[in-house]
Length: 172
Image (cartoon, rainbow, N blue to C red; front, top):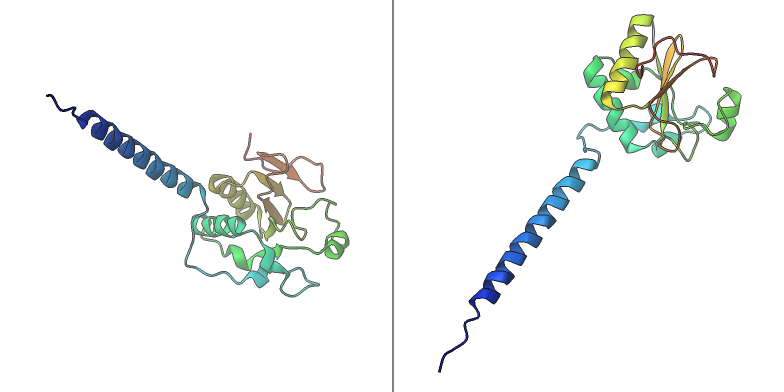
């Protein structure tokens, strides 16, 4: 009497286990790379506070902070010391003439304006911001607006007053 060999079943199960395990590891690696990288440098979120509400800067998007840290490293500028507008309450947004759907406004908290003391600083901020990954850049004479609001048009630059052409456009 001949006994039946189950070797092919064991080989099939082993192969399936390896394929599924490899797919799982690959999935984890790919998804991990899409998440913002964590940094050990703590940022005082009060630099983002709306002038009328202490502590409001705590809502600022972590991805925005990460990208600003990258911008600071690339430019060598003290970006977090140069923030002149971060988070805004609806009241403050109206007071400064912000648009009604501003990315600065709570609860969005995805935008920042950075002081630019001269044209050379402004231009470097604009080009390095694009290099870091900012896809929405407003260009004023004395500041640069950066935001990461994915619910608005991407790869755009604009000037101030709103609607005017930017003095420098990194997307053309």
